[in-house]
Structures are given as C-alpha cells and as structure tokens.
Length: 114
Image 1 (cartoon, rainbow, N blue to C red):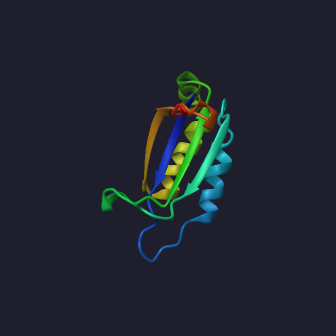
Image 2: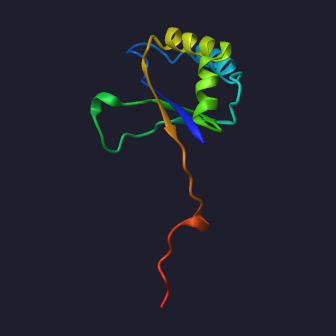
C-alpha cells in the first residue's frame, strides 16, 4: 500500500482556516480513482522538532500501490484537486509519498515469559 501525505501549515496570522476551501478540496480529492482510504489528523502539540515546521493538519490518502497512486495524481480528478490545493492553501503545505506498512498488536514482537 502507498499513501500520499499532506502536511498543512497553519494559516497566516490574523487569518482563519478556510473551512469552505477545505471542504471543496476534500470533495475533489475524494474523486481520485483508486483511493482506498483517507485519514485526517489535527495536530495538537509539537513535542520535538524544528520550530519552523509546525503543522496544523495532516491528511493521508491511501492507494493499493505506487502505480495506483501515480495514476490517481495524473488523473483529471487528481489534477483538479492538486490545482485547487495550491490555490486555497497559497502553497502552505508539504506533500510526500510513502510506502505504507502497518503492524497490529498481535504482530508485535513479544518478550518470552519465563
């Protein structure tokens, strides 16, 4: 599985988050072909890291493969969502692609009991 992750920077001082723009972006992005799942996280605290990289929200889009993700980004729906993302955020975001691997609790390495 592969995911597209978008890290959103807070809006500029004295500006509110554009909720209408966010809803429009979601409506466009959710039409990308091959999208399997999405998650949205609102960042509450920065525990460690560069003070210059404070994010307010993280949005993840999951696809079966890198090919499916690339195809979605190149699709008409992906292009529309991307163009609108740049517009409504004024390019205040970071985006990355990653291979997603997940382990469930029953798969964790357990210490042997004596």
